[in-house]
Image 1 (spheres, rainbow, N blue to C red):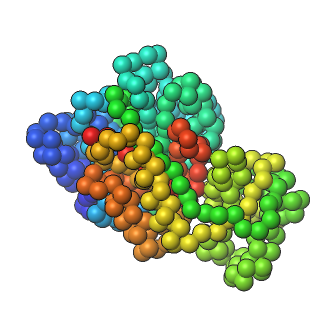
Image 2 (image 1 turned 30 degrees about the vertical axis):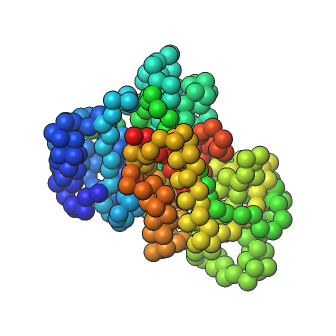
Image 3 (image 1 turned 120 degrees about the vertical axis):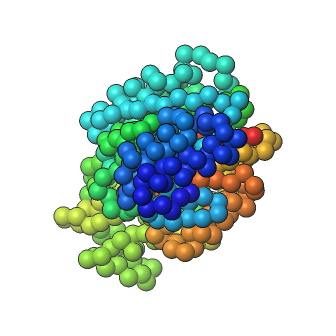
Length: 381
């Protein structure tokens, strides 16, 4: 992690640190997460020049961290060098108009689809979640790879502004796009997912929705269900400033694998609710509840699940993603969640960021696009 405010300086610092760590050799790949305060092209160019590689993937973020530090407005990054792995960069453009075509462009750049020595195939996927259609993107990636890849990552952030986000590929930063870092490995890569929220109250049917806008529940304006829940649980629900209530009362979409979370963000015309990601019409949802302790336990569970998938191999390092809404809800207690991950991983350590939604698609996990969910990917030694 670098705290340098100047983007070129930040890129040079990270690049120099990585090359020194590898005894003067260039990394095989770099993953970087950067605050919206940075000049992305300047940061990426300096990083590429100093590190000696353009195999760089990542995204703008809404909070950056490692196993030993966290901050907002900074840059976190991990460099990888391995004889057991091969990497490729893939970019999909214009997600807002055609997410399936964007996914196809990404898969065309994968080296493992048509057959490869690698037994284990994964990809870090970062997307401009503000462009929408992340569920469709992940589903199409899964279909076009024949279910042979495991995906992890999240939606790019912009320090909680929700205005414009970017993904990184090489020296370039793209909006309305997604980037993937393909990881082909002779050893297993572990992915774990957990959120720690539980349903409360009666199930509700989504009777009208349009993308990320929830119009009605059980035939009534969506806001009415939240007002009723606030009254029955003795919580304050300020209609003029609803986000503090929403951060503690998210929605869970019921599925056979569990509940996929969606964060309400604002109240719109006619009592509609703007959410952080799409909610399908006809779905059954619950208002969900959690606690600080539950968030910590969820992070620990996700980390242990990822470690278990290594089949006994020791971890070399990990990527950790959780929602910006989780950080805002927990405040300083978010450090307890990161400490739980660090404790489970041991000396391997991790790098990560707060995202606008999390991506996870792996064997034995409920997959797709999530909110308020810890996603952990562990790389083996």
